[in-house]
Length: 270
Length: 214
Ligand SMILES: Nc1ncnc2c1ncn2[C@@H]1O[C@H](COP(=O)(O)OP(=O)(O)OP(=O)(O)O)[C@@H](O)[C@H]1O
Ligand SMILES: [Mg+2]
Image 1 (cartoon, chains in turn cyan, blue):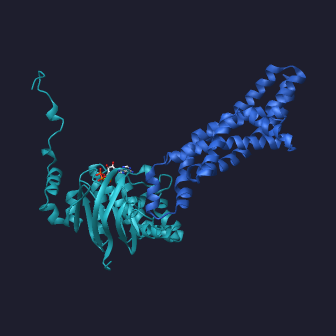
Image 2 (cartoon, rainbow over the protein chains, first blue to last red):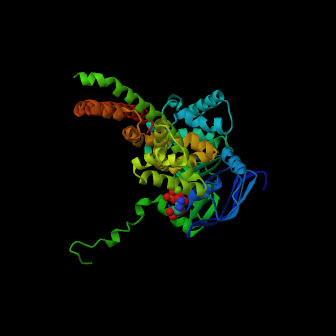
């Protein structure tokens, strides 16, 4: 693996029982690169991004990540390898998944203290720095339940960043948010991108993908249908599948209602 | 009314014994129940099977039968438990059987996202259990746990059958001696009622505390 490549997935395939989620997915993520994965619902974007930190196993292919190599299908990586990967790769989930029984600062410091053995005082200080960065220092003592979705997601980003990861994975970080809360979360991600964080981002926010991503990958029909420089892929996609997907996403009002064709005219006769 | 005064003391002492026994057996049952529940969920198959059958037996056999097996049955092999020891063994064994199930369903109710978030942060499965899963399971468990405590307290009434001097036993002795069944049993009922109201109160308190985050 060249020094520059942080993640290389080579022809990864994933099945749940008899259901093939994706086949032969290959991507490469270089240091400081932002890769956005887009595509229709059910294409396997979440499943794929979870393979990167091995929250899901995969059936075939090879995953090289941060100097480790995992081959699909056979032996699981050892506990030490998994822990090394997971402490160096941060993840932010669609549903935030904050720990409800811990307050904001405890959520953020749990892993640094337990896994990296960072002294409590130092972990707290770092957590406060991160909270300042996302504009939430005044919420440090609150429980997640009392926060808005946007605030919870910003705390979740802090929680991941507290481990000082080398790579961040985002799985649709804004799709559970009310529209007026999306901006604050995107702002935090945008800042990370500017600071040079290596990121893989599954998103439905096309405009945002175009803005922050270097590379865009479109997943559909069990695989990658197109990938390349963000602007190129989003503005002038080459494959038909990518074109039709982007057209539908960008012009949602043109998509015909599948029910409409079933509706009989008044009177009951066609 | 002097009958009531005469027996208030002994019934009160019996009540204290019931409380002590309930508290001690409860603590042990919760510890064992937690371990058994983890064994039932994550242990190797022989452990899982063993615990499964343990729970089935405890929940399937009549309570009195269990108590009699421990107190009278074991004498056949020359093992003679004192009423106190037998009472404690039975309450813990019985309580554990119920605590396992309460705790197991508590753990299963925790969304998988919690465990995934912990895994993604690099927490070991042990730390995830101790810091993320178990504390949340206890919170979910509180309401069924409160009814379980009341059940255990009521179970102590059975202990008079093996001669353990609790509320029920003292009331029964008093009735035999004085023939004032109504008043003495009423006093016993009152003692149990007060105790279960206290338990209920403590339960509500605890639930309110965890409501801060649930
Ligand atoms: N744990 C699982 N067991 C079985 N099937 C699953 C599991 N997780 C996902 N799937 C299936 O895999 C397919 C891909 O799901 P996935 O969540 O990866 O899609 P996605 O591209 O992220 O979609 P969305 O945009 O809706 O989030 C779906 O058909 C889904 O039902
Ligand atoms: Mg998804």
